Length: 178
Image 1 (tube, helix red, strand yellow):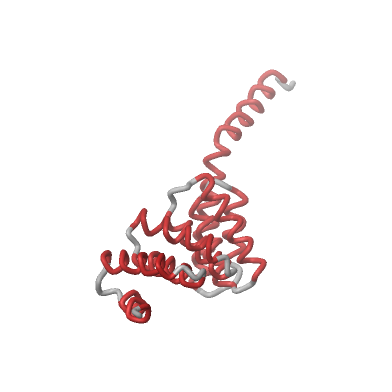
Image 2 (cartoon, one colour; image 1 turned 90 degrees about the vertical axis):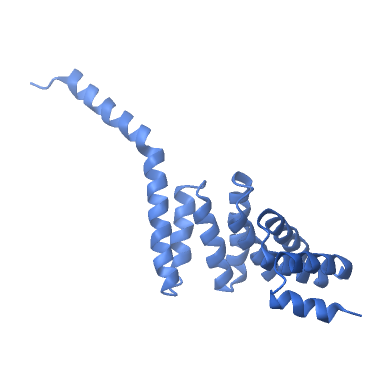
């Protein structure tokens, strides 16, 4: 004879355990997908972006997955993927606004799409947050494309103070001299 009360209790116990562990499982699965994507990216396999995309879908709060997806999208050179990389990075930054790596990758995607004003803003924010000389150089390049030479020079001078030996900045400063 079946004890229905015991069966119901066991079913409720299992269901409760699954519900309580779901957030942990989602995070673990997302991280595993990122790791798989990293292996594919290292092998220059285009399926890396699929793994990163799945990781973001499984756990939208995984900023590492969003960062990797944006970077893989940038490497794809496909307009639709780069646009999607910008979208995914923007969603990640809404939840994690201080993630400099994610912001840098979004800036690179924006630059690829010739959205120089938005890219310059992101590069500048990364640079001020991390003192990243390369981000300053990229921000200066975008300022030049936007025909803002004084702003570009100011960014290059700041970059030269951060790293006086960074050759691209020294070259750009020489080119900007009257």
